[in-house]
Length: 230
Ligand code: FPP
Image 1 (tube, protein in one colour):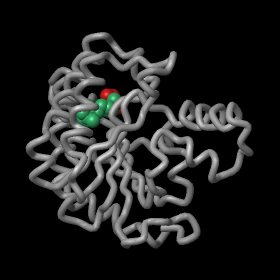
Image 2 (cartoon, helix red, strand yellow):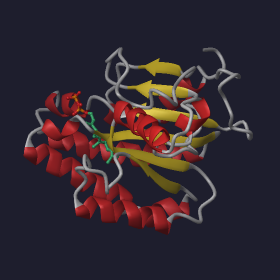
Image 3 (cartoon, protein in one colour):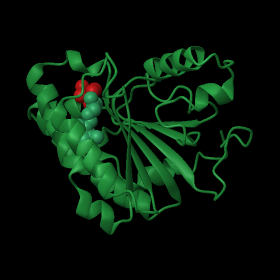
Image 4 (cartoon, helix red, strand yellow):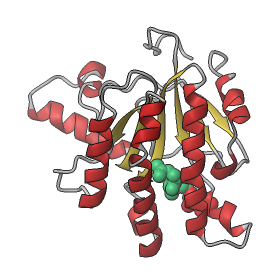
């Protein structure tokens, strides 16, 4: 954690995940790529449970990017269905006191691509978990950092507001999202993505060869051990 950037008062951590490698996980088992995404959604549910048991206040995951729409139509359709499934896990989320949030291109913006059934699932999950007080699980869907920052600057300019760190932060998709303490990227890709580029300033980064469907609670602990040493 970078103490100059870190603002969480209760000592809890913000973990962000780039859930890479679902496709390769499936291909290495002679399964269709969609099976990898299904396994990825199931592992996300288990990482959420593990996060609840740890000192993690905020977990933010990259579910679908503004660039992912160009994937084959059947794969996109499958991933959208998995989002509907994740947002539909309300009973489990409530049992674990998990509050759902979402970041992405606003549904009413000209660029938004989110279909109605996913919009409905997102809105329902947010409403149905709004009273929970534990882990905040934020799903980035139709999300891109560069769009988010550009949109924030545009909005400040429209209002005649000075462009500074506070005015931009206040106009991000979720101004309450705290700085990231550790970013996890699975499946051996040693690079950043178009994900939380503003919020991850000063974050530790944990790169692992493990594909997302196999990421374990033990590896989550390894990633958390980097916080404070970055
Ligand atoms: C990367 O795997 C993952 C994605 C494109 C995001 C989709 C993530 C899931 C379906 C996991 C469940 C999450 C939610 C929020 C429902 P990839 O296809 O890029 O794998 P590859 O790099 O091996 O091709």
